[in-house]
Image (cartoon, rainbow over all chains, first blue to last red; front, top):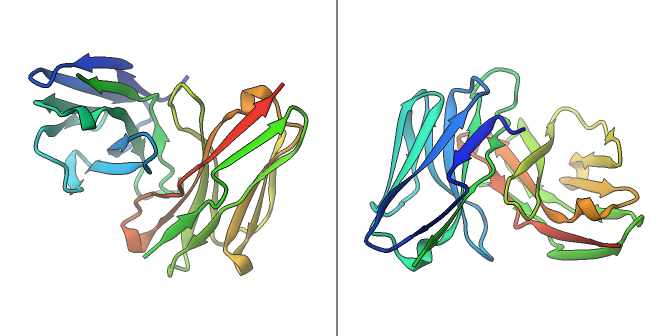
Amino acid sequence: ETGVTQTPRHLVMGMTNKKSLKCEQHLGHNAMYWYKQSAKKPLELMFVYSLEERVENNSVPSRFSPECPNSSHLFLHLHTLQPEDSALYLCASSQVGGSSGNTIYFGEGSWLTVV
Amino acid sequence: AQKVTQAQTEISVVEKEDVTLDCVYETRDTTYYLFWYKQPPSGELVFLIRRNSFDEQNEISGRYSWNFQKSTSSFNFTITASQVVDSAVYFCALIARSNDYKLSFGAGTTVTVRA
């Protein structure tokens, strides 16, 4: 059982829809991440939240909007997506500082298909 | 700048064969952490091991073993007596201060174990 849970696991949405991906970590970590994994492409870091503050936004289009209401929850709000946004979206968490070596633990991912 | 190279794109073996996955890294930091993750078809990235740059001891965990050699900047991973359940994509990754402790992933090696 993973310490990082994501819902939904699968999502199909139209280009005009608005949906959200949810992530919850049960590890007591202080940083959370969104990664995107497209077919035949390397993992891309999208957003990083450390202590609930966004510290990284890797030139992600504004149709992706993250929200981190507390250290345990992370959302990715989606609106007016394009078919090329279809991918596996992975949430992750880590403890920045301390002795864990910043080990990043991932959730099971949310498979997104935009039609 | 830091970089992780996994030169092997795909490896196919028959069950019970050993398989070694190569990982070569580049970083100017003297303190860094190396990781291996496993990604089965379900999508979740499963953390396997973390090694810090000051600990060159090789490690064995069941059928898995890791060979860390700073002299060649390599962190290779061997699966002994492979099983069908080992079929997955395996990623090598690096974290260092100079990259704000963000994970740099290799491109991944797809391992297929045939019965």
